[in-house]
Length: 461
Image (cartoon, rainbow, N blue to C red; front, side):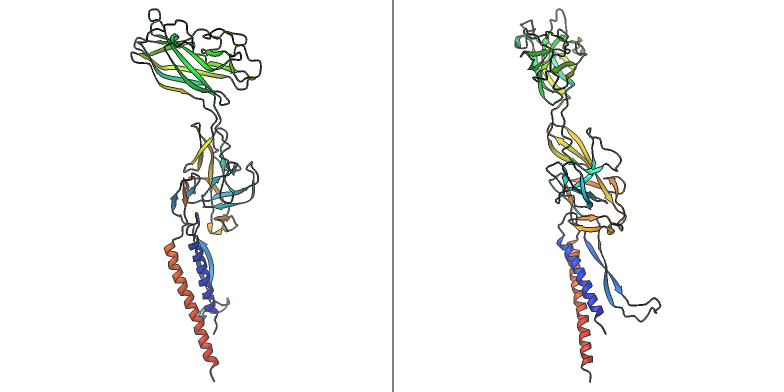
């Protein structure tokens, strides 16, 4: 007689209760994968021994196997909470410095709770960086994953400014308008023009300038269906004179809009060449780009001289589009004023689509791709080494990590504003706990019975 079977049963049941207890303890842990206890019977038999007559030596725990089934997804309010739908793991790496250089062994996780650190990298609660592919300066993302994998920095794609180079008006000039009472245009005298409207334009450094259009009706007796347009910048020149500019810095007169008898746009003279403005590098004020001294039409006296210092920003050249202007018998109206420049933008938010593309949103209204997440899968997930903190490490048993963009190949997709909950079935685990308790009690009863039998033998006379 022996106690081997009962002892092995107690040990196996205790191990199973540990596994179940760990599952229950992590039932609310994001990305946790439950485990089950696998048992194997134990026999003492040599290779040449017969196959019958062995009572067996009990039970052993052959494996504690994790179950990589999908967990339930829960919605959150954080755009960097990223739930994986389907197969795949995120790769994490330690950050050596603020440049994004990685250090230490790379690990893998299903826990998609991320945030941005002070240097703009996406990290988890252990400050390990989320690894993917960084977009280039234009927002383009390579199609191929390889040596370009690294920590993604979402602040590296700062919303760079763009200089205005086109401007368009959608408007109606009132055909009933009377001629201005002052015949010589003067931007300081509202009686010298019919209407005016201003819009913001931007230079190459994101500086804002106000460009104002002045519309002057031509005498219908001599030039019917014509309007003259003057443009004035809010800035002043190096001498302090306000700038009144027409399409080219050396042209004279105004932009002449011609309409047909039906009120439709026909042409705009003096607007083929962009309105061009350069900037004085010493003052930052715009000046004409002419090679010598020239009088700017529309100003009240004074001349503008060419800048002598290097320009602090690139020349501002704006092509004006008047093709959407009409002349009907209805009141003057501006339906739309557009231009394609914008100032420098600050990061206002992030969005991650199901393919893992991270899009930065800036407060200047623009968006830009900053990177794309990669997912990694293994031939044998149960071969991964569990490191704790919802992280696994690659081993020889797991096979080499195979990388793909989210939604490509065998890996799943990503849902932003969501986390993957633990896949623990709490009801099943509580039932398992009852079963394991009964198993433990039964194996204890085996030992007790063996003890009683031994006592009987000792008491024989």
